[in-house]
Length: 87
Image 1 (tube, rainbow, N blue to C red):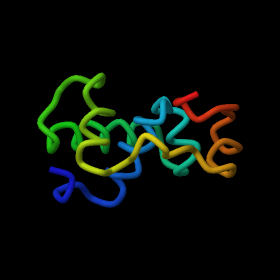
Image 2 (image 1 turned 45 degrees about the horizontal axis):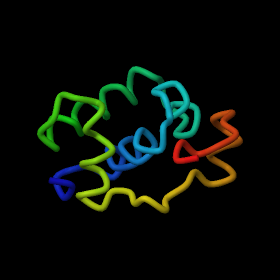
Image 3 (image 1 turned 120 degrees about the vertical axis):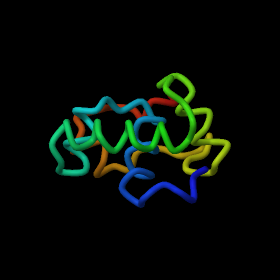
Image 4 (image 1 turned 90 degrees about the horizontal axis):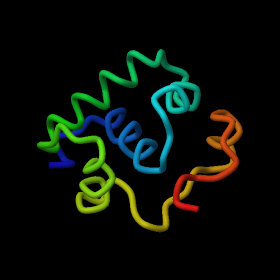
């Protein structure tokens, strides 16, 4: 359930659902990759999955992100990505 997620876990889930790797998310959030990985693992446990492939689906269902969500220009710049993962 998304309401059980911390604000940071929601950020990590959102970025993962947009196709960001742990390292890209770490750059965007200015955290160590291991910290991002820990947030992601805790969020997945709270959402009831151990499958990364289901994370995006659950994020959309729980309204952590949407099909129209995109990386901001600043997030793209920080991560080095040219697109947002949905393209």
